Image (cartoon, rainbow, N blue to C red; front, side, top):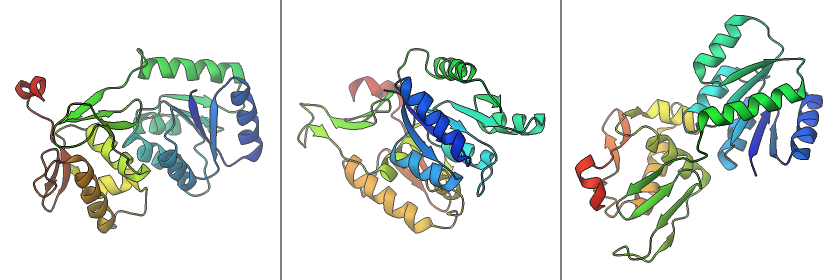
Length: 240
């Protein structure tokens, strides 16, 4: 079942969308503020987001940027603002489409289907190999296949925050991500100086995913700058 996150501060809009989407067999999460939306998204990663720009706490663009740090789920902006400046800013930040209030439900549903096709035309997201481990970004699972050396087969359990941080890194292979960027994308605006959080969760990920956490192979620290996911060289991937 497709999970949709609806973010709007108008109770009647939330109620109407929840009813209409559930009738059409969508799994629906609701949020009335930007901060709440980022928390809900981290706990229950959405397949698609419907976002009102006029939130009481955060700018809609900030919410888009926070989500785009770790998810490619389609984002459809739903707003009463007709100014093209707002539309361009939302699209530049990573939104996929823009629907102006008042809206027709059939049109919104059609936009949702079209956005989902553009983002994932084959319905699949990649798998990433970390040595013996397989990270399935579509299923949101980390598994050790049977026959891997040194540890029993099975799932590696990650907390929602660990998963969120890992997914941001894996979706940017080889790219240096600053501490401030990771904190903003994983924890949200206002956490730019919480470097202790980042160090703690990176250490936890390494304990779970690296064969030698003291000398990480995949999740690399760039001292004084940030972190990166370092994929295996192309010549070595077939033998991993």
